[in-house]
Image 1 (cartoon, rainbow, N blue to C red):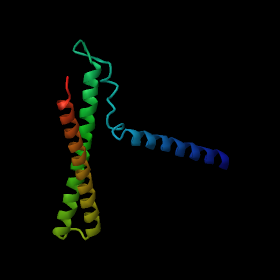
Image 2 (image 1 turned 135 degrees about the horizontal axis):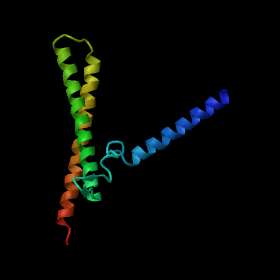
Image 3 (image 1 turned 90 degrees about the vertical axis):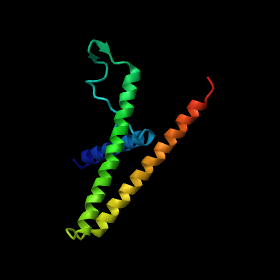
Image 4 (image 1 turned 60 degrees about the vertical axis):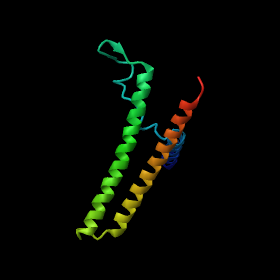
Length: 127
C-alpha cells in the first residue's frame, strides 16, 4: 500500500512539474482558454473564425491579468485603510499586500511597455 501511495505521489509531482513547465512556457495559458461553447460553434449562422478566436483568447487573457492586478490593489487598499482606522493591527499583512500590489502593477507596466514597443516596431516595418 505504501508503494502504491508513493507511486501516486510521485506521479502527481511529475504532473505538477509538467503543468508548471507549461505555465513557464506560456504564462497566460490558464487564462486564455476559451470555453468549448465558443470554439467552433456557429453563432447567428456564422462560423467563428480562428482570428476572432485568437482575439477572444488575447482579450480574455488581458482582462484576467487586469482583474488580478485590480484585485491586489483593492485588497491592499482595504488592509491599509483598516490599519489606518485602527480596525486591524496587521501592519505586516498590509505591507505585504501593498508590496504584492505594487509588484503586480510594475510587472503589468513592463508588459504594457514591451507590447507598445513591439507594436511600434511592427508599424515601422517596411511592407
